[in-house]
Length: 226
Image (tube, rainbow, N blue to C red; front, top):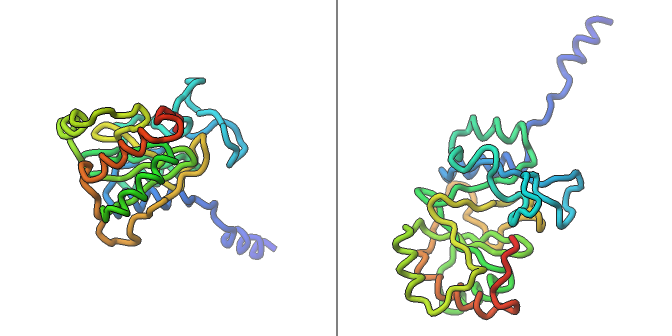
């Protein structure tokens, strides 16, 4: 009997330590060399429910679930051991990219305007990189840019809508397959699979189309919800 029980104990399955978020975070950190960290996540236990509040202390959080909190953005890393530790302890935590530096930057705008901008850019033959989508916002990944360069480009615009956001050095962006307060985060235009080289457009090549699409959005380009 002891021998049988011993065999059963030895063959007992291990606790599953992987999750879709962990797998994605490892790909970004070790494959792409993008610094990542876990987002704060959502309060409540009903996965997939729209309108869930943020797990941070702010009851009026503008980006529920989709921002760093503890640890802060400076903890972002490409170290596989740290990534495994974070997501083994918090398997459902959103995957947050620390933008800028050697990592991509991004421009985000309301989803309706984002779809319009991609159509316009495709029509002009402008090459687009990966695009992250939530039910309310789309984000175009672009090559790293400096604040000085961005300031020059924005100064040349007649009007820059408040709904157009810039994720540059010191910023962050939630990546798939995370869940934000407005719903699932997904790829509208996925990055190349495996170790294939990632190409990113320069911010200047897409900015005009994004500004025009945001200014022409049905709500006037003023929607700020993540």
